[in-house]
Length: 181
Image (tube, rainbow, N blue to C red; front, top):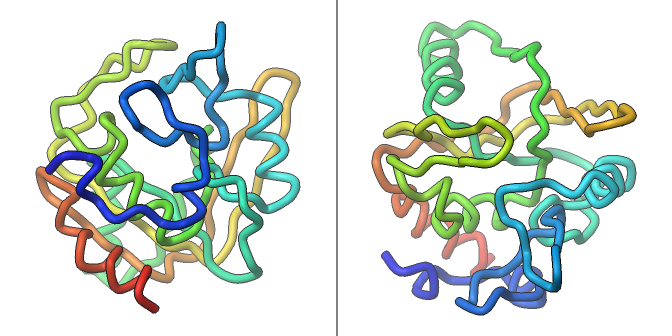
């Protein structure tokens, strides 16, 4: 599915776009006026963490659950824990911040890295394949740490698990329902 066929949440529609029409996430740095999608801007990420702002649209997230998109390994671990009725808590921090449900559903289908199973990030030694599965996961809350060089997040208490196989377009109806609500 083409990225421009995915319904766009209003707060994402208000974001700057690159020359192809892709919305630029809130934490994406610019270099020479161009977005650097595979990188994370330290100051923007720290602002989002400290002020409970969505890492995609930069709007404030209300109290309550936050969402993020997870790759194959984490989606499988969460799915296994939930199937066995065990609690899940990943103690390893991630540099990927939380967002609104609609923003993360949208990102799972539009971000070239998140939406394509064979996609690779070639920046900052992230050249591994994303994998054939993933999920949009809702968490009760998050913790963060702002260090001298990075912002790290941990997520607590799963409240929603929306797995997908090869294509995250499985979330299209869920996104549309979220936008219609």
